[in-house]
Length: 324
Image (cartoon, rainbow, N blue to C red; front, side, top):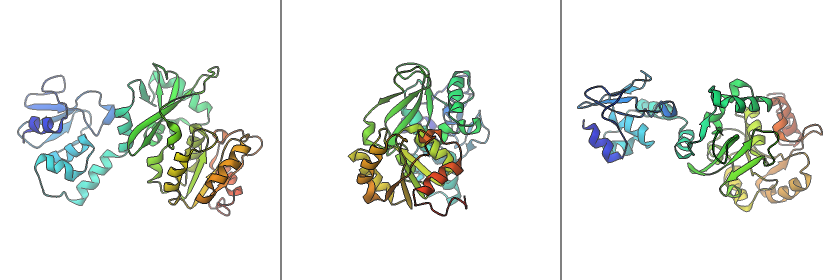
């Protein structure tokens, strides 16, 4: 097995010497560790088909096609062509590769995102952002999952410093993002980059969602709270303003058929916008849900039962609250 030649043809950077490279090996960044591997811990043994990660002993094998598929984020068949092998892999191997790479969309964003973005974790630099999320009603257990599940990150430098970042993707490509300041005195709460009015938050994930209810709301934090409280049964997205654009309605039309129930849930003081939006969304089967008088926006909701009760009042979920 000629590892250097294969990596050159695939345009994958590698190192031939360094702290993680023993004699007779070359090394690449471990694709299974992802962002957790800041250097090159995946060692490839020259003249053989074997590879292993020095960070995680579970990341090892003897199939160069499997490794190449992980490095390139491509199908096994595509990687096999590069390696020069035609035989299809056994089904269990395909499942293994798929499981190791899940969720690929989050890692694509990491590769395309500005370097100032950081995943939510227990690092000291994240503590103010974690504290803000806790004040917004998210538990620590949920907070640690928000990057993997929803792409949420924080920024400590540059124009978006001090903001939680919501990436906006379509077809696996980063189209833009919006950043929410964690500082109460910041006059501009949201700062955005890119034509967000054309897209929906988490559109790619919605296309694969198994939820039976889709909730459209105004802002990303509203959508985040609904998605977390929905516990997989209720999906959410937002239009970044009080009313969806023509492009967003077109995208909603392509997704609406996946969901048995479609609900429009905007801020409590947005009644005119709700009525205008309903006229546009009526053909897609959307119904309006109204927040209680003591709740300003969906981001203030604090329990799954509370969310289900509000959606049930909208009509489409009647009879489901008790079973949940």
